[in-house]
Length: 144
Ligand code: TYC
Image (cartoon, rainbow, N blue to C red):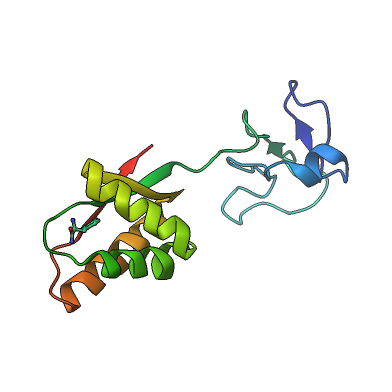
């Protein structure tokens, strides 16, 4: 099989060079010679014996990040909020106290910033714990 390269591509995408090891894998269609529905012969000399490998324009994509916020209310005990911050958000007792008091005094406060699915799981854990204990504590996430 003959590999035909995009003119913009300066290197073999399979080469074991730095860019290949650190970068994202090639994406997009890989067109090969045997893309004839199995009718023609495989291997060298086939009619469309080429493949195009396209490297992504941007190599790494940062995940979208979400802030997880606690909202104040008049009924959830302070100690419950502190324990949530320690358990769900892995805060020290001191940081948990500081964040809880910030929410208490300002109405809202940030517990952390995470990729979508991590943020969603934390919101669910807080809301489940609050519901179970019959506290009206609210936790939300917002795109950063
Ligand atoms: N305001 C609550 C109280 O006085 C404490 C509290 C703090 C509740 C933070 C919710 O997200 C919260 N008991």
